[in-house]
Length: 296
Image (tube, rainbow, N blue to C red; front, side):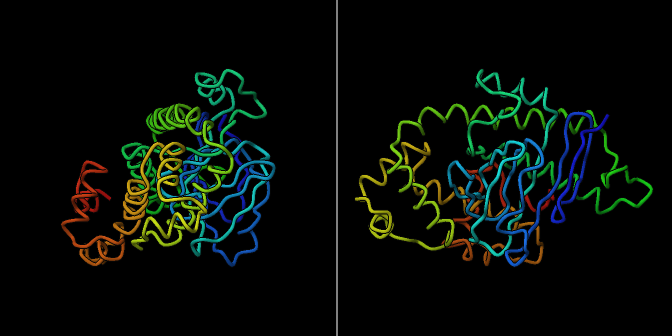
């Protein structure tokens, strides 16, 4: 039987199979459910499209942003704080038995009630690009399909084997990367971890701005040297690389609009020219912005 999915008013189901369900969450900051949309209905992986601060009640706060993945256990309570005007994300739910088997490869202590003992992780560029293409392909079929193809629960019919195998492969890579990074993150003190998260919030709120290292460090209560050190120790990347990754991940959403000029988009994202943007995009994703736009 297909997974039992309980949708909130700000969610749409795109696919539901026996092992995997895929849906979208879109909530404007003015919506009553923005700050608190209630407990998570399922064990869920979430890939943000916009930038929002998330606080797990009884747990950590972090910036949910493109290029990262958030993990929610069923019944998890959490709240949001506005950074962008809308919280937009793509979510994936996996059958409990399959999820637990996947997680226990990396965390033998994972339990059926709490399979995720981490709140977030980094998605490598290729996995992020694959996730976006997979989701947008599903979304495109849903938008183009007529009512006769609807299934019970509001989802649509696809080749379930292909979709479920693709999702399991994608999420296994994301989980492996998140758990591989866990020991590194735990070595950073809570005070320094808070400084890193504050730096992320500042950059995420204005990713196109070329903030100076000294002013960023001052805002985080650290020396420039110390902030660079603890940022890399916690995230595994430099501040500059983090900012590039965020800008380029945000670019994927903007590139879906064919009316946006690439030179204008480059300047909007904080790059000095079209060529600079194209070089950074190709180095990050392995293709040019024009090639990505042609594929969506």
